[in-house]
Image (cartoon, rainbow, N blue to C red):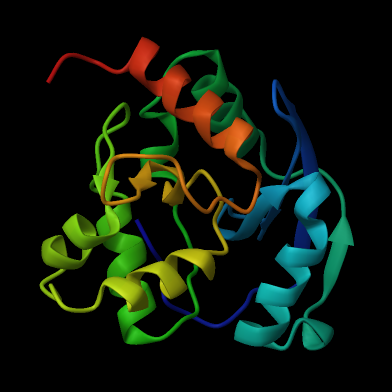
Length: 180
């Protein structure tokens, strides 16, 4: 789900403990997520916000995101791998990026798709490199499951949080994914 509207003020930045380390979530008071990434990738989060929103103009304060949002992240890591699907996002990107990010949310937990496969899925079969660039600009780590994209041979490639995290996330989802 997405909400395409102006940034809400103030935005709340919270760190949620996960088995993979702290997970930063930037949301408004209604639980709409504006960005998310692992705490050790905080510089990346600010760079993406700055590029897409002019982060310096945002009113951001540290605090607790709404409990329902925090509960969905906790439920995902506890094994409910569909828990993040209902999180509402406030994406800001190009039309192509938005199309890719929406497409990524359709890849079922426990499944993977190559960059070429994703390009075909969103109706742009020759845009494999553009898929890679848009995937790298994803400001919603895990919630928009960029970790589900693989190389042409199915190998793990390119994940901002590191390939060990990507492997862990995919293994976690495979263990807990509902039967298709």
